[in-house]
Length: 328
Image (cartoon, rainbow, N blue to C red; front, side):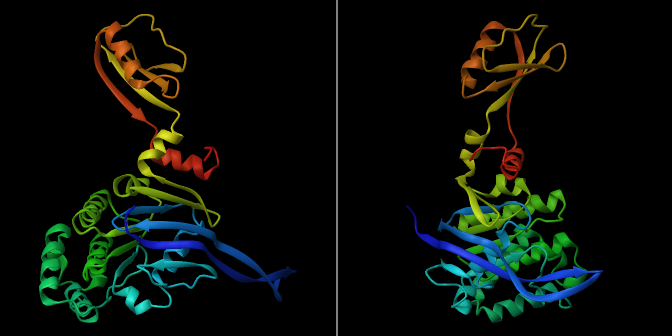
């Protein structure tokens, strides 16, 4: 087991909401309150260098969990330690070792050129000249900041601003980077560029990444592990590599034959879906039939022009988990 950089134990966040009454279209405020458990006694650990995706439907408790890990919110109950310290008690020390990007909020100075923002951050974090120069050269190369580095932040496109946000969060070489919906609203090319940069920082600098997202492509491309939160509770905590094996019952084997195959035999656990005279989809239950055995059989018995295997998209698996259609 590696070094644990985040430890949460029975972590909870409860909000008290005043209960109002509607009487003849007039709202009467009462002295009664109800509790909303945004995060409900969750426990988890994150090791150094891990990339963990916190996913779940809107209102599930993902962002609240991130805010407690960054020290923005104080837990109602339980505890969370980041790099051995409680974030809300040691906010200054914590801030020097983490980077944070909230997709719909900015940490950049709106009316200043991006270059001035970075110089201010250099001073705030007391970044040595050599580290600053090295990181700026890296960001210019990897994120193409040079083209808009002298422009005021308010004039930047969303994609340009998000590249600036992530570079700003990484400027002081944080040990942990928290990303809350970092690709929301971005076009495909910018998403691809940001994902490549995040992977690079994780691989080359061993930066621990904590990500919340609704974009399952982010999860597939970036995360080694997913933590599914729903109703404030952890429903699933599993390596991404195991998710398909556990929740995907079947694979589609698409075979294009060199000539019409005639009558096709299909063993138990297999369904045939014709797509044309030469192309067929075989939906194979891999719990009953080994995919390799199935393919070997058809290659031996028929003249095959092309063959491909398609598993269920992770987005569909997660959607079924949200809806309670997949047994955890």
